[in-house]
Each structure stands twice: as structure tokens, then as C-alpha cells.
Length: 451
Image (cartoon, rainbow, N blue to C red; front, top):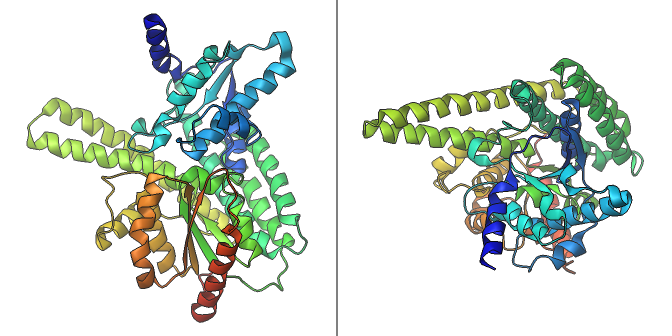
């Protein structure tokens, strides 16, 4: 029994981490559909056999192998990998070998339970025959999601840059969908158009990404943005603008949040959701903050060795953040030439909001930093309603709700909390409908931001 405990404990370090993906099938969970598929296409272009797993079909398996105390995304992603392995085993029969796969589950440091998903899922997988040989590939916020070690060293930087661009483009395509769907001339045409657009951009990233031919990729994005205008009915007047913040998985995964954006649209909204790249930029920004703090603490203590280490980190993370913000800014500027999709918040601006209003501090960390400041930013930009989407019992989003609610009267913008688990609350749609009535009244009194 004692030896089994040691082996299981070692599995958490030996079978979770960075692994070379050559000759492996890289399984990517679907969080946001477009972003997951563009990321997988990018990896395929660099010679990695990446595949986006089907999602939400294994929820019963996820429930069976969790206790209910875990964060809701942990249940969903646990079910996704178990369902994937089950279907692969049935499809391949005797040819099925778990060692052929690497399951992608990144992590974050700090108090959020997300940092423990891959450890818990390692324990679950180890309880199944053969699945103890399935590796979990993990990137971490501790080093800004570095890709070192997964492919040849000389290609890491190119893959990182292309992968980031894929997520910027995915954010823009998501925002394009939310921009055109409330105004579509024919029901369902926006979804059909964007599904075809996603596949077009998959091919572009797979073909041009390895060559770093970003202009060729963005030319395809230009065509999609320009062509989207044909989907819209110009006679439909603009609608109240609703901003969404919250936990990144729940606000992005349409099954987990019971398609809250579509429900809001049903009752007259045009929606802008916080982006995936906002979180990616935040991880680089926060690592840079920590390196700066470490440098100044070391300087005061005359610890020259530590100073050199922190200075090296400052240069590294500062370079990452500069590139990310430069690439994002240029890509959005280009996108605005074809369609007035919503822009994105700069992380430094969000921290300034928290500091000036004395609302929260980046030293605490978590997505609460982005959500609290994002709500204030949306309100100041003229949005007509604000929605906080998160897993039931999520600590960062509960903090967000507690801090923001006293501000609502000051902000004078309707606000709604929407915590989710696997249950369907009978009053949810009524709450959204009431919220949208308030947003409509705000829209009539104050108008809205355009462009």
C-alpha cells in the first residue's frame, strides 16, 4: 500500500508537465470553439498532430468521477477526456494505445482551483487500466505559458507568436459573430457564415503559420470581415450593448453557460464578451509586475545575484507583453477597416482603474482583477448592461460580485450575476429578461457606444 502511494504521488510530477509532442496526438479541450480550432490548426502547421476534443458529451462521466465540490469546468473537462478515451478505445479496438496521446490541460498559480485540475485529473486517469500511460501536457502562468520543450527549440518562438495571433484572430471572429448575429437578415445565417469562416482561417493558419506569413493569414480575415456585412439587415436598428466579464471558461464555453449570449440576444441585446487574449496578456503583465517587484526588493537588500535573475525575467516578460500588445493592436486596427467590431481592454488600463478607484489590487491576482476593472471600463464606455458569468462557488467571481454590487448605483448601469453549474434554474431566463428590460430603459435614456 505504501509503495502504491509513492507511485501515485510521483505520477503527479512525472506524468503532468511539458512533453515533446512529436509523434503524439495532442488533445485540446474545447473552451471557445473558434479559438480551440485555430490553435489546433496552428499546432498542425508546425508538425504537431493536434485535435480539438468533443465537449460536453461526457458530462455524466465527469460527474461520476468528481464529488461536486470541484469547480464546474473541472467536471466538464474531466468528462471530455474520459469520453474521448472511451470513444477512441471503441474506434481503434486493439490498436488503441493511450501513450499515443497527450492531453492538454494548462494551469495557473494562486488560489483559483484551476491550478489543481490537471493534478486531480491525473489521479482520475491513473485509476483506469492503461490510462495511467496517458500524459497530461501542462503549460503554466508561472512562466507566461512558455512553449519550451514541446517542439524543437528553434521553432518555439515562431510557434508562440503564431499561436498568439491565432487567439487574437479568434477573439475578433467571436466579436464579429456577436456583432452580426443580432442583425442577421435570415435566422441562422450568421452562425453558418462564421462556421465557414472558422474553417477558412484554420486552413490559413495551418498553411501560412509555419512560414510566419501573417499578412496572408490576415488577408483571409479581411475577406471574412468585409463579407459579413452581407449577412446583416441594415434596416434593423442598433440594440442595447451588454458587456460580459467573469471566469474565462464559463463565459466562453457556450454549453457550460447555457448559451447565455444567445439568450441575451433573444431578448434584444448586442453582446461583447471579455476576450481570451485579455487573460493571456494579463499573465505576461503579471509576471512582469512580479519581476519588477522582485528586482526592487533585491536592490534594497543588495542581493546582486537575485537582481540579475529578476532583470532577466523583466526583459523576457517585458518582451512578451510588448509583442502581444503590438500584435493585438495592429490586428484590431486592421479588423476595424472591415467591420466595427469591439476593441479590447489593455491590462495596464484595467490596473489603473483599480488603483485610482481603490477597488482591488493586482497583488491579489485571479480574474477578479480583470472582471472588476472590466465592469467599470464597460460602464464608462457607454455599455447598457453588465453581466458576470462564472461557475457556482467560484472565488474570484464571487469577490467580483461582492465588490461591484455597491458600485452599481454609482455606475448607473444594470448588472446581473449568472453563476452556473450543471443544473438548469427555472428562474434564469426570467432574470435575464428582467435585466434586458432594464438595459433597454438605460439604452433609451443614455444611448450606447457605437464602434
